Image: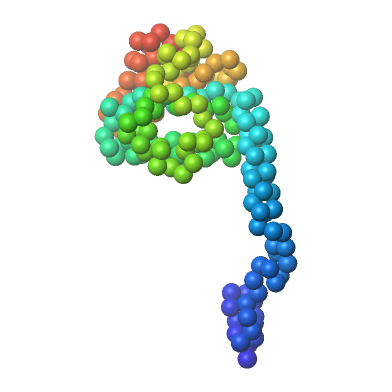
Length: 184
């Protein structure tokens, strides 16, 4: 008697095939693990090479004290999406996170993510203004009058890591101007 199961048929009482009986995995387990590790290492090296040729994009995560808990959770989701999209991109950016201090809610939220400690991101505990020359920084803010037409390879483009639902309108522009850095 035959029984239909998800696109395949088997005789009742006949054991289901397993990986070893189908020839799908004739390699010893150690060899499979070694092969997977080598493939991941090659993928990581390829990503690093592509990212090294990309634009530097800095997420300014120094806004924690200004946000409500719900806004902070939304920001963390956006950071996760950004990182994942960048890893899949054919022309990835060099990512930098600033203001990710141990003990902060931002650090705690990111640290909960699987593999966060090994993310290919430069993580700054302190402010970006102390880590990079001012003349290389460009804060991308919707409030700027300047329009960005193309990316310059030597510049560092800052995206304000702030979810505020328009409560804090103009704050990223104010911050950039007070630091004496360009905006676009």
